[in-house]
Image 1: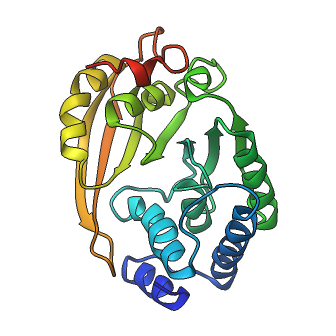
Image 2 (image 1 turned 120 degrees about the horizontal axis):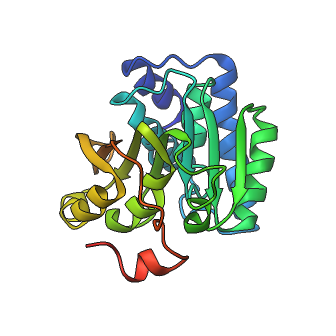
Length: 238
């Protein structure tokens, strides 16, 4: 997917990029490649794949769920900024917080944000487990996103505590997601959320399968969750 195809594909989904936004994506690609030579941000560095598998794939959540308001969004384990930065470029009113455990990635994202002239973007260097126990962030977000970070049973414990009651946890997954959902049912219930929507679609060009799960926060998460760093991964709630 080249730049022109990317613009056209978004147009078909009702997203019209202006000249500034097109330039922001172009600069994003350049910086991603430049910084990737110094640190491991992504294995995908050729332009068509970045536009398809990183940019377009990240924005795909907004084809099904509403991102048009001035929502507060937290992106857990965003790595090189996916999905939240492409979403922020398309929907400038979003208030984005990215939490990542690797300081080098936070440095890249801070530089990226300045270069792209993004406002209302906050970067936090922390383990997701500790971040979720911090009163400043806990149950404060309208939308919490995560893209291919961990299995859903683990991801739920890292993300649901951050969602405010009435808010949404949106998990972006590949084809194996159905098994993950079964495993995560107990965790999602304990953490105070329930599935409100699911969407299955194919990524254009390569026709790879994608799943989008949306969970609504219905009640407050018990204070003991998330547990200490490493424990959710070692012993998921199942």
